[in-house]
Length: 305
Image 1 (cartoon, rainbow, N blue to C red):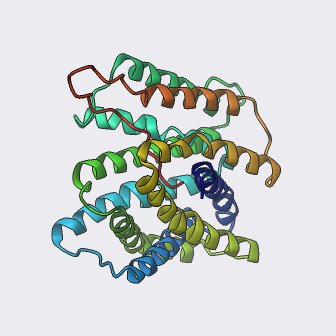
Image 2: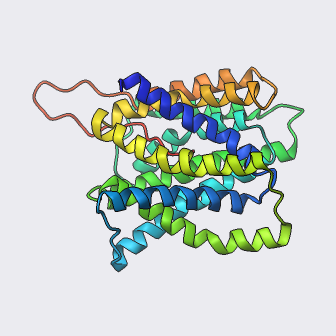
Image 3: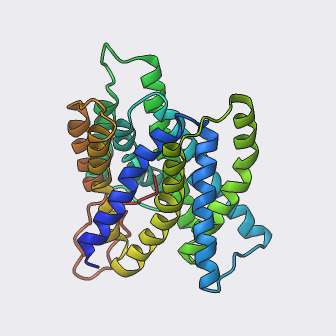
């Protein structure tokens, strides 16, 4: 499969995931939606690991790492996205969540992992302006519920940034499929009590469409997409694999408008273009010097949405 086909397939899967979240959360609590997708995704990865004769490490240190990345990379962001989509459109959620690489660059700098050059600082500023445009900050008709939903989507991107920064520091020597499986298995166990408790308190309203949506969101949009993404990284390299970051919002906006009949607002493409421009500046590579080795650069980080 060619580079472009792989990237388009992954962008198609993750772009549709925002629609599946929107449909699922109509009949389930945000905790239940998050737990459902995590658990189904974990099942896919566990089956894959068994076929590859791989095992999860269970020493105390790795269990602690799995717990941290489970909370930062799955439990919190998946719940925030579902909660946010109860208040804003799937298209708006997708574009705001595209800010993840900006947070990754910022947290990597704060953690001392990367140096921010002037062009990257400019990229962060442009990206922040783009997030503000997309969120409609300053609009007189912006409801408090929309503000809360937008902040939840942005916070999900920040969680992904923490997850990536932590993984870079402590889990670079662990095979990605093991890291991903440990993350999802840990997330499923941690989130189960909240999913059960909120479902009992608020009930479930399942329809065939909602069941299909959560199954596709978990098995395909989380489990299979993780495998595809890590295969892209291993065969294409992180820089080329990260190009999917620029495609996902386009797919999600188109799906939201065409399938869910969500209103198209010009602030989405305008703000989205600013965010993508900011990402491009943040991930800009410094030309290699003639003698000295090039400095470590920030590459875009892509996280399942």
